[in-house]
Image (tube, rainbow over all chains, first blue to last red):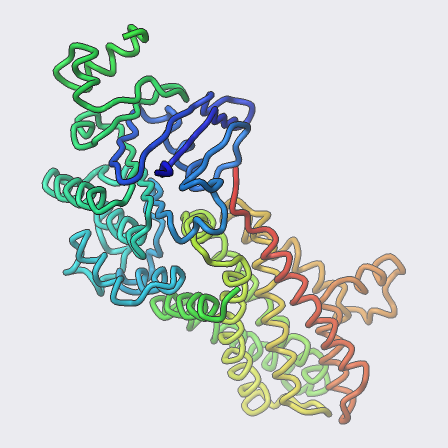
Length: 237
Length: 245
């Protein structure tokens, strides 16, 4: 079966500085992948390269066998940026109905995704009056419209309370088991255990590409923070 | 480009305006109040009001719509909504036309309010059809919208965007023929005024002031303004980039 993501020797430069250096990996369909690393390590740039909004210096990125950013992929990939990219001066429902029309999905899908992210009580609230975490969930709901085959989520759980964070990871796992591929970034190492597979990133490079269990076993660590440190200090493990 | 996505974008922009009634009030009131002020300044000098009134009837909405559109478009660029929209099947033309239609509709209402007040309460008079003055005012407002859409690509902050008004609109105001007839300008400035859209917008209203019949010059002026609108919208669409650094 065609992998959901195939990245080969990806290189991104910004202002003369290398932000992503020769990164290669593949992600099979229907998996929940965590992209972890400290802020500034190139996670966002890598994700922008996946959705095709980033000008790249070299290498190739293919999603479902097609070059990233090609028109056929636009209705199959949902992307959530780190800062909520929704209209602060519209209500939750007005935002989702607009994006539903743009994606050519029925308006009922808007109500479904509002409930999926737990914002049913706030349907008619203007987004600008919601808390930061709630605004992030409106942005996430927008990406869930139209049941995309791949979801690229940049730090979707930052600043959320632990219960909501757990609920969202349950939602992500449910989406993955129904066949959606998800790549979720975070700088919080504990979130690693929620994923089926981990890509650990540092200084524009992938340090490890493994399952959470295998990573802990390989580094002889009991938590992901120390596993990450072990990998940096001893890259050959 | 699809009709459904364009109309959805128009409706979304209008909904945003509906949540911001103070902006709506400003769009409608500012040109009307400015025209009232002009009528008051030129009280008892009907000839002067009838000379300066018609061109300014179009220029005030142009300035208002230019500012509103450049800030609205810049907000889309900086808030990330534009980047997100460009990862969806939305065509660049859907985005640009959506905005043009939404602000175009606002411009129609704005032009009706300012013209209605000018021709009744303020006592403005033109030899030609008052309705054609309304048409020119709408075209001017559309020109403001189209210029705002394309020029906002050059701005990366709101501070820069608002300064495009004095930078791109005020020079046109100086050479468009209101202060000194264009035929009396130094040759270089005359040539400059020939390539700027506001000159044609002003000339169109001057035709309506002077002649009861629709002159071929008026039609030419309106045609040129329309071409500038289309060109600015095309440039606006071309400045949208799906891929950035």
